[in-house]
Length: 186
Image 1 (cartoon, rainbow, N blue to C red):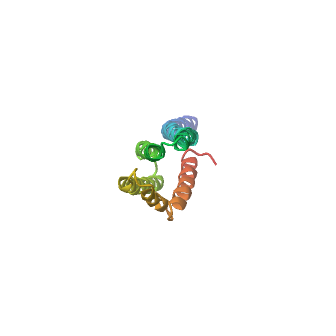
Image 2 (cartoon, helix red, strand yellow):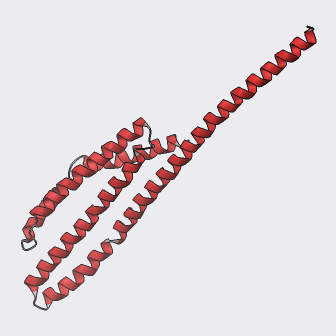
């Protein structure tokens, strides 16, 4: 065999090896792109849902402004006892509806656990635990409220007076930062 034949065979082997290596690298990159796309879609959907809930909560205070004038009108016209009881009931219902948004966020975060990294999963689980803890505390307080006794509403003052709200805020920032890192947005 001549040198030219050996060089040709060598070049062919190097070419085939390079082509096979590129094929496997391309598949790996495509898998990473698919995972990043799925994460982007899931994270975007989660953030949109949180924004939607936040927007509803921001719009919902208007419901309080509709409740209060009617009650005060009835109080001023002489139906004081019934108006105050109804006002208490309507405000308690408003608090219950506001608390339901936490359970929606909790449900949405469950789907993120399927695609999130280990570090992000730990943060999401911590957020779920904080949300569950807060919801349980709120439910216990709401069960103790008596709509006929205005002083029983004072128990609601204790909710959120701890480090939990600060942790909610910082944890949300940490989760968003990790999401951005996972989908390669700096």
